[in-house]
Length: 288
Image 1 (cartoon, rainbow, N blue to C red):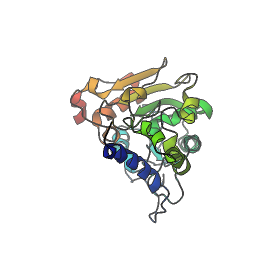
Image 2: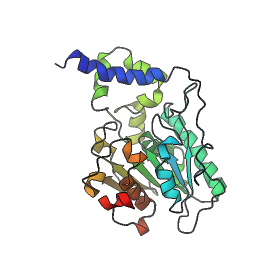
Image 3: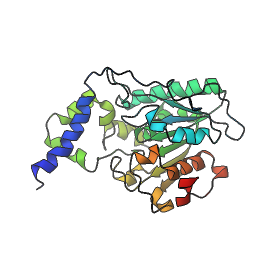
């Protein structure tokens, strides 16, 4: 049997995450209009013939529309894309750390934001790039909210497509009475992501994908959040599942780094957005 300290530490960490979400804070929230003036969230941007679909970036749990994309957004804008990012899943009194609300409601926020981007750019469709929950949540939009008619591609960076056990941490919840109820009541966006949740059961029943959308999943074997990492992969006829270490064995990125600054992952994102002009991704892609 594990010593009690080893058991209590991870459970305490999970419950602390939920508790933080119900403590009012004074700082102002980031908004989708507050992104740095580096060419992203520019509603005057018109997609080019080379990149006709605007790209919408969807942050992960506890992320926001700015901090999650300080690396990837400039990477894509410098390559000629019109790039946008949104905040979703906000809880009252919790600034900056988003993605904690019910995921089906977050998908509704994504739907409205995509419509806003398409109206501004005049594009017929957009592409989505999401990290963690942001790579999984759009699948609800595609399947249940009509998003497949508006989206060309979904690229997930370490998405928890089939839920997460947080390195087996969630298996301990039944041993702590009230823990699961606390998560559901205070941070439903976290509860929805636990392997086997009602949300994920609904999302994945009947297949992982919908027709007409290209799916790419980019994973790292060093992921310590969306675990086991192989459960990130999707099944379907128009899916490409990528493990970074198959492209570059030297890549040590974990769950956060893959979205924040891993240019090998960024290169694979660019390939997924424009497969007709894809180039080989190697360790050298870190310098491109």
